[in-house]
Image 1 (spheres, helix red, strand yellow):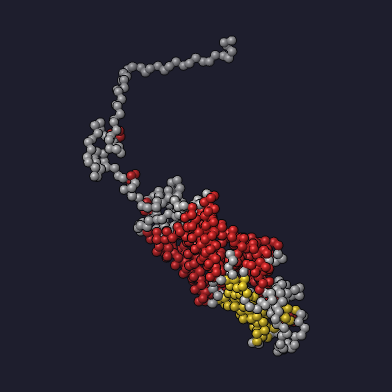
Image 2 (image 1 turned 60 degrees about the vertical axis):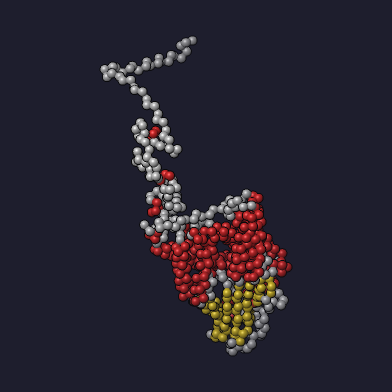
Length: 589
């Protein structure tokens, strides 16, 4: 039986595993995106399906272009031009975890290990299916959202609970010019985001804000293909139990301990962020919105705070209503006097606004030390000395952290720009721009990773944890036949789980030259090939006269003497007499 005919390596099995992985990932992403939008109240102003598709495209790095228009009294002279570049990492992280888990399980199910060609075929099939489904999202992610003017007005007179409720005033408009049909607007009392209206005008005008959004097809397709390949690569690098082909086994032993430790630490940080979001649900005044924001954007806030805690500088600018979505230290720093241009954001400047910011540095340092300890615990020590072992752990973790920190900086960048125009005249603009420094992230990530790897390795050696969790996957020897079909019944089943009657699959083919239990003994009395003929045993062929390992036969045991014969007419011997019955109690007194 050939290798391609096994149940786990055929083309049908590869396609089926890819379909399962992609479908599970898309269902998980759709569930998180739809639930987050529902908790935020977005489904009250438009269809939830197209909005979910657009958010999923944004989660894989795609591009969505919204366009807005404000209509009042049947006129539509007020338009809004927007540009949004943000990745909802809560949706993307959920899809990455599900996709990577299912893909790795399918790779581990291949009997005898996957070949380089088989691994490339599986990854290419998953990437092709995922990109095709992203294309379907680009077709479905076209719709419009209509928000009534009453919902835009903060305060008790408005709709209450609208998406712009409790937003601050938008300064910088001054007095609006004369609009056709409206005349002068001298008495400014009630407020719309970017537009100040007199009392009662919104109810009379029945103003509506309509936002049309569409997904850019080709940029989203390219981003989806790159995203899925990056997820599969990170999953293979971080999985210590998935066997790799022989050509990649050495790289896996060098990279996997640090990669698995770093990914688990980043996931633990996200769990801390979700816990903070749950606390915000219980303590805030809008629990549904807090929970929805945590589902969609908890990784964004956590992974933005990690580089800040490692002293990576950021540059930001914000104006208008988007200041309200920022945490208090960022809002005070970016919205202070002279906030028109970009400002440098460092941990020291943020600490001037709030001393609690130093907690981010403490948490980041503890998480990096935890990554160093996990790296040392999963790296085999061998016979190397303490300094050499600690230096190797520091080198591995430093190299991976130097790549991870710029990646986090790039993923958490935020760009949003909204410009309001009346009859072609720009009257207001609001924007938000947060960008980190990838070069500083690369350098600081290498330094922090090397220091954490060195300290974690020394701590692991001192506590006896060094190499305790090191478990390199077996390196299979790829031959023409693998699995139970190659070794016959009794060497494992299709489930891949060894048991008392189904031993695990051997890592190499049985070899009679190295396994003495597989050698076929020649018939009795005949010498083995290459062995001189032996003399027959003097007392016949029995076990006692068989040749031993040393070649000298054992002495034959003495033959027992003849047993005495009994005549047939002689009666059998009488049985011994029965013992007397016991006496009565107390008879001998």
